[in-house]
Length: 112
Length: 111
Image 1 (cartoon, rainbow over the protein chains, first blue to last red):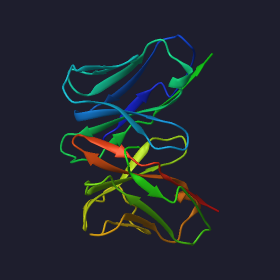
Image 2 (spheres, chains in turn yellow, blue; image 1 turned 180 degrees about the vertical axis):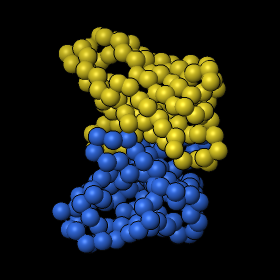
Image 3 (cartoon, rainbow over the protein chains, first blue to last red; image 1 turned 30 degrees about the vertical axis):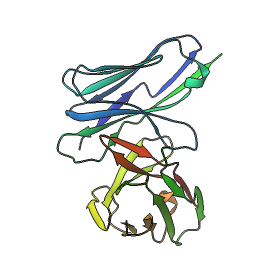
């Protein structure tokens, strides 16, 4: 069974602070995606990373894929209340066709 | 959520009843994935279907759960004789290239 660990589980910070969320596995991903989910809604795709060492930026969000393609991180700079939500990483493991394995999520709350 | 439609959005059933959840993928997409999300947990893969075929059902419970994706019409996830432990949010997703796009989900509550 492939496990995808996400940390921290909960994060409460003030507006303007920086934060990093981590996603780790013992197995190699063929690709990895980050989603954000609002209460009562489905996950919304933020980014897909495929190449080891890849870094992608989306405004104040920076996504990094580990060189060995077993881990990833999401860094948010100068967090805003609108960043509040559940952040999920989801990996597609080599040899498992198309299904995604999700991490348990990081619930972020950004207060004024 | 990129045009993936699910209905109903909320479904309440009593123990022992049947639940039918529907998913209409984005236009032109013929692959559907179903995931289940228990409260305060991440999503767990259930089943992957193409039109008229089940490709991977490794995440489906062995009993009471079934899924189909007919040639015409939406994909349906059917849960027979529901129990309280089936209460969860059920999401479907469609695939575009390397990425999966999710619908808004059906929240099933079993009384």
